[in-house]
Image 1 (cartoon, helix red, strand yellow):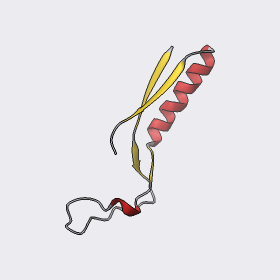
Image 2: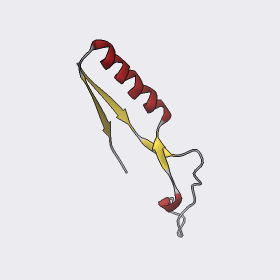
Image 3: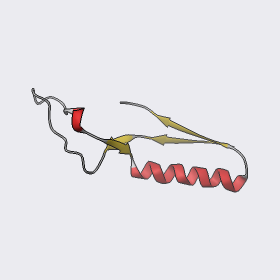
Length: 65
């Protein structure tokens, strides 16, 4: 069985989100990114399903910056 899990990085809860000098976008220099918490649960569930079945493959897919 193949299981695909979609994940996304998001700014950490401790990160400040300052705007850049022309106020058009975030200044990403000081932002720390983490995996979305819900995606962590989805990945853990996929790994447990794989373990219960005894074989298979878990594929993690992420798009974007």
